[in-house]
Image 1 (tube, one colour):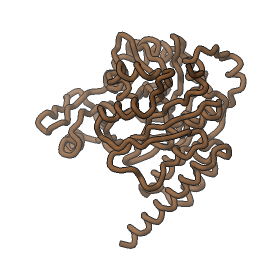
Image 2 (tube, rainbow, N blue to C red; image 1 turned 90 degrees about the vertical axis):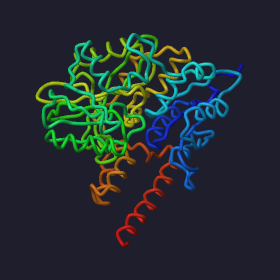
Image 3 (cartoon, rainbow, N blue to C red; image 1 turned 30 degrees about the vertical axis):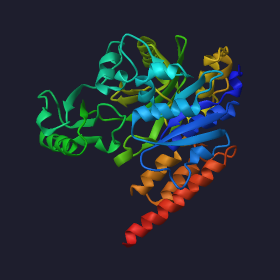
Image 4 (cartoon, helix red, strand yellow; image 1 turned 180 degrees about the vertical axis):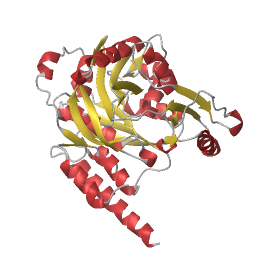
Length: 401
């Protein structure tokens, strides 16, 4: 039987930045990683940056849009007959895939799960359902309605909606963030929903609009009935268009700025019976904190906490392997106030035309913490730099046409 330290951790994901943050966190703690990367059409000619991390022993592109084949490829390509490896999802798709195939994956891997009275991880991805649940724990959430936009005929706009309002997909997995938008009137809302029915055909969440003063992401970990939340990421800049709401840069701040809300969020995670790494989106408006959404996976900004002194992915693996975690000692090393940047999100923002190239570079240089550009694992940056160069060349070619 192999020792668990000899077994690599298997990472599943599509976004290279989020996966790389988990890979770096685990690698810095002495764990090795393997990566199952899903792509839709063909194996890319240029390797994705996270796959070139010094902490990745091997990787495999899985070219498929079929969930069954994805499950088969992960089990045949990454399981080990001598012991169960730990499987960590880094996006909504892989979280839902593991959850929908929980029984089959559990025969071969140790996986995150939600086993509580509120249903599985897949059902908990429903943002309307999330808001119904959090209110039961005394957490404020904006009013929402669900509109079925699978066809124009199924669209019924409730009379209770107030304007302006905010719309987004009911479930994130498989839907573009470009669908997120603000509508100022019933006519504008109807047009937006009809356009969605024509192009995407999904269920949409219509939210009461609140004037957001500050936005936070709250990273946390739940294991063996214990939930830990010790820091918040205060967002200073977020993406637009196809990347709307994605954190570009921000700052690590202590969780004690809203202690009563944090305690209620801990009760929420315990209540749904979740085991794993999570992050929660929180809005601050007019002196009140509002729940926005829950992600049952490591968030895109998670590496900022690792760099600040608390390595949640490694602690999660340690706990799964039966190690005792001395939280008091760990928290004394945590340093708040550092700024961070998600270079991929910053690049997407530039390529979409929302900032100049010089502003893109300044955004990266100003940050204390960078997710891709780190001195202890430099090769992913070189591949990211190649992506930048190719993207800039392509953008200028398009301008000349």
